[in-house]
Amino acid sequence: MSSFSDELKRREADGLFRRRRILASPQGARVRVDGEELLSFCSNDYLGLANHLALIEAACRGAREFGVGSGASHLVTGHTAAHHELELALAQFVDAPAALLLSTGYMANLGIVTALVGRNGEIFADKLNHASLNDAAVLSRARLRRYPHCDLAALERLLAASTAQCKLVVSDAVFSMDGDIAPVPELLALCEAYDARLLLDDAHGFGVLGARGRGVLEHFSLPLVPYPPRLIYMATLGKAAGVFGAFAAGEPQMIEWLVQSARSYIYTTATPPMLATAVLASLRVIAEEGWRRERLRELVAVLHRDLRPGRWRLMPSVTPIQPLLIGSAHQSLEVSEALRRRGILVPAIRPPTVPQGEARLRISLSAAHGPGDVALLVDALNELRIA
Ligand SMILES: *Cc1c(COP(=O)(O)O)cnc(C)c1O
Image 1: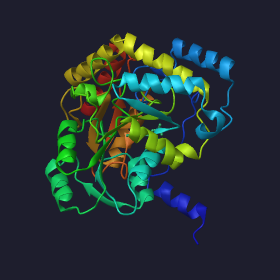
Image 2: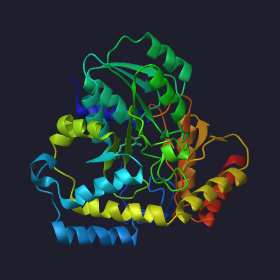
Image 3: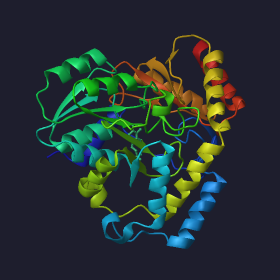
Image 4: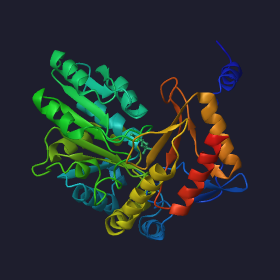
């Protein structure tokens, strides 16, 4: 048995040791880290709502009305009027017949996948899917087939060859390290043709994509009446929505099946109701403050317009996830550190999170940034690329 200390030293030697930064401020364009104020391009708070006054006040009201802890699981006595109201609002928000609130996106994916497929099922997963979807597939004991990123022909070959009774295609809607968008209409058409279900994980699209921020389905203007019976839509509430949690949406019978059988829903304490009241306020802000999505589009355009072509390539993303492909893990780290010395925080993403030779800076933009903030980043990168 090797000791933890040996394993930890090996991680350190391989440049894979992770250190947590300690923040002394809320999320925002500028954060206080280790006594320094830094311009941050590393949160998933895409709309700048994590520190929004309306959400903070809603959380306080929720705490005063329901207390802090929910005290029980949803199926016992933890399911409050705030949770109930939020589920109705979430369903309406994404034009789905029904929705279920779950504790986190990670737990939602574990619960949904294991409730939908078992030992005799087969799961078809994009190679670049989020880790939680892969973990869920392993937990389900279904056969797992991973297809090359967004390769519809490869997916179709796998579906055509499958003899499983129960088939589930799973895909991120917006890929978290590349920022590109899955071909959702085509995925849905393949699921129709081969009698499969489709689980879409819209963690990075909800609140951001579509003119009204309803997410990837609005982005593609998919007809949602009647709701596609094969579709299970899932999104998280800790990114653009600025709070915490996740939900699944779809046919009422499918949602009821999750209530009855998703183990990560049943065997856990209900989310604090104050978070449900905060998310309710967040949905209102997402709907009313359309300028936040416009600001994001503007910032993406500024970045692509002003960053000079050079050794590193900005990947072709229209979402707030804007990866700058550098290649070597070592160099990515150096660029990230050079930016940090200039007061700018951008994380280097290295293997195994991304493939070998595709290390990158993951720039994430937020409506909390102004055009001047992006200009500071662009100037610093343009200088570093010449140096
Ligand atoms: C962040 C993320 C999750 C996990 O959501 P949490 O609420 O943070 O647990 C799941 N899927 C994708 C694609 C994500 O980016």
